[in-house]
Length: 441
Image (cartoon, rainbow, N blue to C red; front, side, top):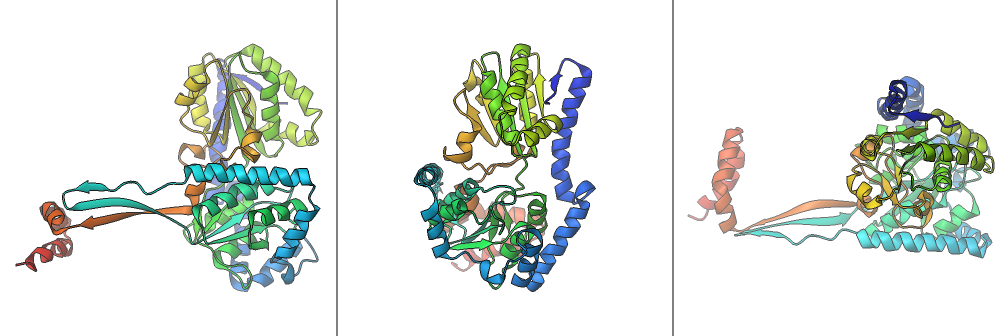
């Protein structure tokens, strides 16, 4: 079961440092294709090359190998009538839940959609910034172990709100990828270009295009190590959102925290397997209560074996001497999800600099963000929240500066431009300014 580590003890502190280092090493293994990922990286390179060369033919062969031995090329594209019929088979209360999720995610993404700022004016100069949506985006969500319509919603709605013209969706042709719930979500979202393709092959198909699946400008979404390796290999060929997974949570709590709530949130993330779950607390009493609650609640969960494994291998309850020490540690973890249960939550939020998503207070479970709150649950992991952000409408928009000069404005800046250009040995740059004034003489 989950270990309890005390920062006041040297051996335990070293174990915490090892856990932190392992999170960074996991990201590095994917980046470098080395260590335990070396063989996987080679396999992914082969799959990408095969899809680039043979397109749909390669997709069918790979799908037969990993997902469905009877898969055919005619099944790659999901027909609109399949989605509509699937929606008709979903129980009304579940369909209502899908619609609530879609509506609230859309509401939030519309609320945060960026608008062009007012231009900056100097005499004779106007400087602006323009946001425009991508023309096309590829959305990938997994389906090997379970059905994840929520991940589709968290990707598709921000793309729609951004104004992406062509949204391409890929998910594996497994029984989960074919589930009525997934297809119903596609129908409710009004998606037209939905395809059955999984893993690295799907990423390659969206990057290169096949006779059935169109190429896109950017690929977004979570997946297993093969998916992440494929995204890394193709970064630069197409836009990539980030390298998402496995799931993780850090809870920061003092004696006011609810042990049963905290245990439930930790278990919820461990349920993904693999996952990383950490409680940072300055209360030894709370640590003991949470430990007991984890043991009790885990026995009641369907995925108990997976939960126990995740809690044992990549998780810990960490007891520190002060909240200052724990907040500093949380910033080093830079976790995908951070839940705060303290006597002064707002003060902790102000000092928490690095997190994918922050859940404040006793009544803010991570599961709310997973399904209906509004922000996307596709978030940075493995300490990468120190420099990156989760998927949102911003992911599907570009920005370009807009620079407008009059003769008056250029005249004021011309001496500095010429001085700097000549200093860099770029007399053509200097001449491109000078010629404008010489032409007026």
